[in-house]
Structures are given as structure tokens and as C-alpha cells.
Length: 445
Image (cartoon, rainbow, N blue to C red; front, top):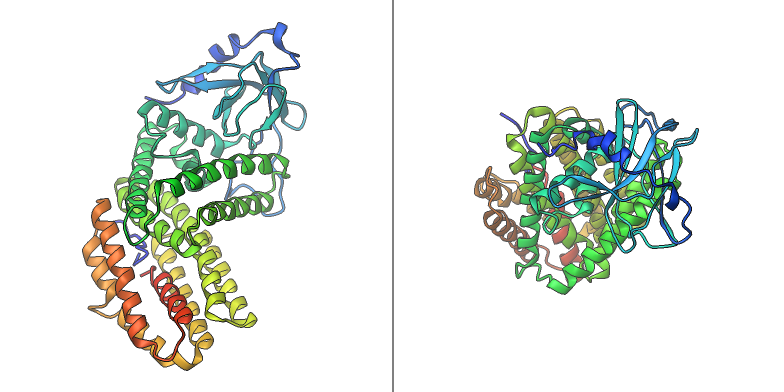
């Protein structure tokens, strides 16, 4: 039976190689090749497998693919591709290309590259505009899988539920290696993403969070811009694993900022992410073990990043010293590194347990006058009949958004009430900060 970290415990829609020969044969149009008013897409084809690539060490740079044929295509309603570039182009010695289209005002076009029997794809999120150039993230195995998933989303009419940003956040090299070219795996992955998105939407509308439709629209708009900016940043990077990871971290920070721009605090986004994570992992349980683990690990890396941002902010609110804040940052870095090196779900669970211990220890130091009470509260939360146990029993393996959301809201309120009644002498700011710190720290058993 598959394990899971609960944060309380943890195409036929293949592109048929995008009909490469057919796409390329219908892409020739030399009369249009130098039109000054055309929209341009600049990019690079590489041999990398993508983010979290096992084939690249931190300092290594992915080699470019010379002599690949590149076109631009638009995904049709049935998931197929229609060539919209003025002509095909060839990548240079570094794998770079500039390909043009007469289309303007269109987003999410797909760049398709082929060489012999190999093929690569990437979704270009930025809106193409006449007379301007937008940038594709380097084409590799990961971007190819993401493009396949996007085409499947179009074909199944789910782009209003799952965004390209969602795909980007959940798919890394490990996930791509499992789902690329695998229609069944992609269906399962998309289904899990859909369940996660529905849970987050349901939670957002719950009175506990009270996020309005206008706030959600602000977040969605900012996320789309963050996605386009991320693709440009990757294009301008050096294709090394360390550079890609840095750009991805910046992308995730931009998503946190998107919520902040809608007046949604980091801890709220973290709680929403934990809820969607629960739904995603439960829904992914039917996957084969390799796909399940790759997907779950990517999911937990995403949530750990968000949790770290929220935790660091809450410690500042609690009045932590620079040494205490540094210790929390270090604990977060250890959490991420431990998840990355994990080879099983139980190891990921252990990483969150260690993070919990480190965070609670620093909270006791930050609120030293309430250290004993904090220890008692934490023990109560994790007791046999404590808040965590109740949450585990209530949720189980369900994928019901209603059950998951209600269980978490009850959990959040239960912990907050416990902290409020136990931290006598603390200020309201300290109590609120301690409540969120203990809530987030304990979403790992």
C-alpha cells in the first residue's frame, strides 16, 4: 500500500510526435520569413531533462541541439496542433532559434522542434504581438511533457480549472520522465491536478479564508505574468541546474507575491496549498508507484517552499531575533534538501518531522516566557485524541473537496483556540503568530 505524507501525516492524446513531418511540410512559406510586423519567438533546444535533472550536476550546463527544425503551432480544440509559423527554421550551434508567426494577440502557442527521430516542445505563455519578440523556456524533456499535458487540457476542456502555472509548478524532470508520451499517466496526473484545484477553489470560498472572486482574478492574472516572466528568465539563464533552480525559486516567490498583491497573506496561501496538496496526493494514490512518488515528491517540494515563506514571516511577527530567524531559514533549507534526496514517501515524512522539531524549538526560544505552554500545546496537538489524529481520521483517503476543506478548517480553528487559551501573558500579535506557526509546523505527521 502506498504511503503518503498528509500534511497532517503524511495524448490517445499523444501528439503522435506532433505529426512532425506533416507540421514541418506545411510550415514552409519563404515569402513571409522576414516580415517586419511578424511576431517572433526566440528559444533554445537543449539536451536537458529539465528541472531537478538527475543527468546534470549543479555546475553543469545542458548542451544545445544544433540543426533541429523548429515551427510554431497552435493547439486546436481536439488537442491537435496547427502550424502557425511563417516558415520552419534551424537551430544554430548553440541550439538557439528565432521563429516567426503572423499571429498577434495570442497566448500559449507551442514551439515544436524535431531532429531525426527526436522531438521537443514547449508552451510559450507570453502573448505574441506583432513587431515584438517573446521567449520560450529552453525546450527539453520536461517542457515537452508540459506541452503534452497542456494539449490534453485543451482537448478535455479543463483549462478553466487547471492553469499552465499549475502544470509548471507540479511537473519537474522526474514527473516528466514518468508521464511524457504516456496518455494514461497524463490522464491520471491531470485528474489529480483537477481534484487539487477544486479543493483549493472550495477552500478559497470558505468563510475561514473568505477570498473573493476579484481577489482570485487578481491572483490568476499575476500568476500568468509570473509564468511568462519565468520562461523569459530561463531563456536568459545558462542552462545549468543551479541556475534553473534559482529561477524556479524566484518563480515560486512571484506566485507568493501574486497572492500578496490580492491581500492574501503568505500563511493563508500556505494553508490553501496544504489543502490542495492533501487532495492531490489522495487522488494520485491510484497511480503506479514510480509516477506516484515522482508526483508526490514534486508536490511536497512545492508546499515546503510555500510553508517556508510563511513560517519565516510569522517568526518575524512573533519577534524572533536574527539568530532565531536564521535558524528557521536553515531548517527550511534542510527540509527542501531532504525532500530532494528522498527515495521514499516515508523519508519525506521524516523530513517534515525534523522540520517540525526545529521550528517548535525556535518558537520556544522566541517566546521564552511561554516555552512550557508551547510544549504542552504541541504535545496536545499530536496526542492520541489530538487535532492531528482527528484530522487524519476525518480525511483518510477521500478526494471529496467538502470533507477535506471542512476537516482542515476545523483543524485550524481547533489549534488556534488551544493556543489562545494557553498562552496567557502573550500579546495578541504573538498569539496569532504562534497559532499559525504551530498549525504549519504540525502539518507533517
